[in-house]
Length: 250
Image 1 (cartoon, one colour):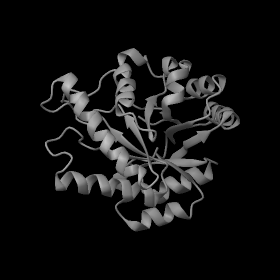
Image 2 (cartoon, rainbow, N blue to C red; image 1 turned 135 degrees about the vertical axis):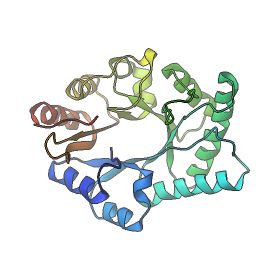
Image 3 (cartoon, rainbow, N blue to C red; image 1 turned 60 degrees about the vertical axis):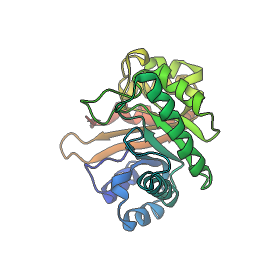
Image 4 (cartoon, helix red, strand yellow; image 1 turned 90 degrees about the vertical axis):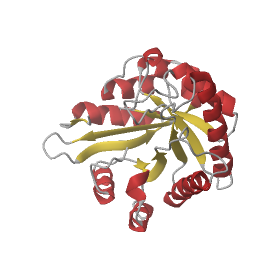
């Protein structure tokens, strides 16, 4: 998973050096076309583009600011070649819990319909990007219910790498991405270590995308990270994580 800690060029070089197959992207790093051009010639698969949308902020569907933001984010995902635009559930704003999730479902549905026009998938992630705010979604079961309420073929989930998620067949089927280091919730259980997560995914015959990011303890540069798909790739990544001299990003 790309972050603001490094430039796009550092992300690309780190993954190419260590044989990583792809990369999850963070939208603020794609503000320049040069970033997208660099990705296009990298040979890396682009698994997702994360967008910290304020879906329950004051503006919404029909508002010019909302429409511009949504179309710009979908366009960035399409230009970068990302398979999924990841939308954060964010904070609840002034909504009550139940009503807020209904409004959230309506807004994700609108994003999904616009994204479908450009053959971009949408993945919902349980992230409250303002720590001092009440979450719109704070339990895994609520996130799963939200996807069912949205009811669009191009909508899936970003789920945390916990033992409960990996062991649950329904969660694995709903996951566009299982992400190491992502936010969790009490009903999802505690996060696994990187090697534990990779080993558990391989044992569960997980065939989807797993995003992770680790750094060199001395230099801070990416030494392993990005994306793996398929049983053999997960096994190789688990071995690399166990033998690497770098530690997980915090």
